[in-house]
Length: 168
Image 1: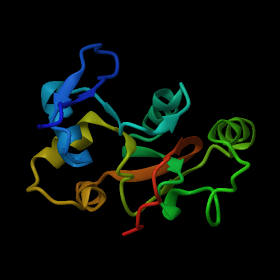
Image 2 (image 1 turned 180 degrees about the horizontal axis):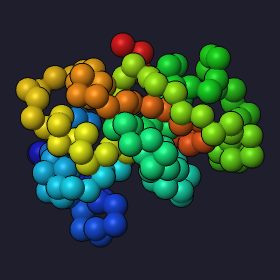
Image 3 (image 1 turned 60 degrees about the horizontal axis):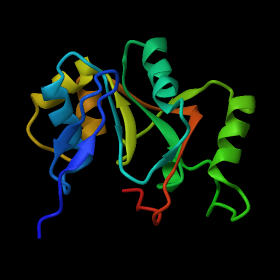
C-alpha cells in the first residue's frame, strides 16, 4: 500500500502538518511556509538525532544577522558539514559532541554552499522569496540570489544515523 503521510511538527503552533512521505526538503518547507505564512520554519527529517535545544540554537543565528535566511547545524550526514575529518570515530557519541560544542564552541557562523537536506531553520521572509521562484534543487543558490545568506553554526550538531550522503 501507500505509506502514510509524514507528520511535521510546526514550531510554536502545536498542530502537525501532513505531507506526502516522499516530499523533499524544499517541497516540505515551502508547504509548511504556505500553511503558516510569516512564521520561521524549523525542519528536521525523521531519524535525525538532535539536542533538545536545536531550534533555539539555530534561531539564534537568524537573530544575530538579519541577512541570514537559513541556519543549519554541523552534521555528519555530509563531509561538508561534519566536525570530523573523516568517518565519525565509533567511540564518539552525538551527545558527547554536543556537550563539547556547548563548552568549546567559538560562536561562529560561516557561509555554506548548500542547504543541509535533513535539518535547518528557515526565516519566513527568505521562504517567501524562495516560493516565488520556479522549482529548483539549488535552494542555497536561489536564496543567495535573493540576498540571503545560508550559514552553518558551530554550536549545534545533528547526527544522521544513515549513510553519509554525497557533498554535491
